[in-house]
Every structure is written in C-alpha cells, then in structure tokens.
Length: 349
Image (tube, rainbow, N blue to C red; front, side):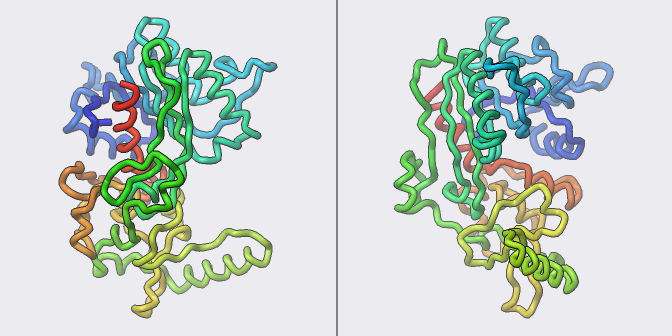
C-alpha cells in the first residue's frame, strides 16, 4: 500500500523472525509504527492478535490481512459473525466491527488466502466469511489470481477478497486486475491473458552461478528425490520433485517448507554435469517480486525489470537461510499486491 501513498498505522505479527524482518525493512519508511512506550513495549506493532484492544488501534481506511483456513463451528443456519469465534478471521472481523460501532468504519478490507479457501469445508468456510462481511455492512468481490501473469516466474494462485463499506462506497463490484500486459498496462478480462502478459523466465531471478554452486544438492538427496517420485508414481500420487531450467517460463509455487529440501523447485544443472540445486534465499525472495540485491544477477539486465529496478524499495534479508525460505514461502507476490492496491485506490477510495 505504500506504493500508492498508504501509511501503515498498525500491524500484528506473532512470528519472532518475521517481526525482525518486518522492522528491519520498514522502520525507515514507517518509523511511527515501531514506536515504544516507556516500558519498551511496541504501541502499534502488535504481537498476538488475540490481545488486540480495538479502541487502542488507530483508525484506518484499509484493513489488509491474511488468515489460515480454519473451519467454523456453524451455529444452526446463521452462518455469520457469531460462527467465526475462536478463529483468526474473528479477530479481524471483531476489530472492524468495533471500528464501525465507534463511528469510524474502515472503507476497504483487502483479504488474502490460499486458493483452497473456496472449497474448504465443502465451501462453508468461505460462505461464513462472506456472510460475516455482509452482516458488517460490506459489499465484496473475490477472485483467484495467479502471480505468473503479473511479471514473476512463479505459478502461484491465491484467493483475494476485496470488500467495501456500502455506506461509504457506492459500487456494485470490484473490477479485478488479472495480469499485466507486455506494455505494462492492466489486463481486466481473463480471456485477454492468452494474448500475452509480461514475459518471464526463471533465470530472471538468478544470482551469479559462482554464488549458487553451494546450493547444489547432494548425491544422496538427489537419489532420494528420484526414488520417492518413482515410488509415489507407482502408488498413483503426484508428489515428488519439480525440475526447472533457466528458460522455463515459471516455477511451481514456493511454500513455507522449502527450507527442508527444496523439492518443489529444483534448478537443472545437468549441462554442467551437476545435480540440481535449490534456489538461494535471495532467489526465493525475488521469485515473490522482492527487490533483493544479494550478490547481483546472473543476467545483469534483469536488475532493471519492473520488480527489481530502483523504483522499488530494497528488501534486506536479516534472518537465517531457513527463516528466509520460510518467510518468502509464506509471502504474497508483491506485483500482484501492488496492482490490486492501485485498483483499490482507483475504484474504491
């Protein structure tokens, strides 16, 4: 939201390493967010969302949030706010409700989740969320968007819910951006995606080869991957490793478990007589659209594309490799969020 002039007035994050990354990268652009009281406690950088006192949260125009897929205990056929108690979505909804009751309703809710939310618990989870938004006085639109159409070489689908307070915003629907055209313009019709989007190659994210050699997997791990894939194939399962080359258009989805063995995204090095390698932490971040300088680029011209040029803030990795992989696997794809932010300001603010 900073890219469209937004200012963050409150944030909540419980993971201690994510908090370290958050403060290291955003304190300079939003110093007030990290202000502390006389006892050294953060005033606006909350840790446990269950401890949030809505009246102490500064008023805000847009609520940005993600939450896990948690099944709701449906009370009869109500399927609304009361059914969300005990979940992290309830904390978000309760904060919004309290702001409404205090006379300061958030204008827009910008929510993100995995694609599977649509069918989670046979569709009940999404139905309760949408019913809750309606109960709070919000109109909404939702859509699954794929990062590979927004200029990053990753096949990553996520569900986005954009909601607006109907007493403040008089619209019938939110017009989603489905991708970015080669000329940088926004694509608003799904059928036009086949006409072409920003071109990508996996090598767009590569650090120099002399740096990435250390990420080559061992013979033992490579043999293990191949054996497991063959075993799963015989059992009718699709689980195994995924191998990509420099010229691949995109990779599969990077996950929070990538640090374990990197099996979902391995880079082929057979031309050099080597086993495949995993992505470096820097490359994992670039795969999500972060501008991370690292040790430079295998192809220097990639440093000037829309995600990595100097118009984007530099992101610094300040945690261990394991935690960096974990955080980037959990992250949103930055170009998708930026394009949605532009449309929120244009259509709903």
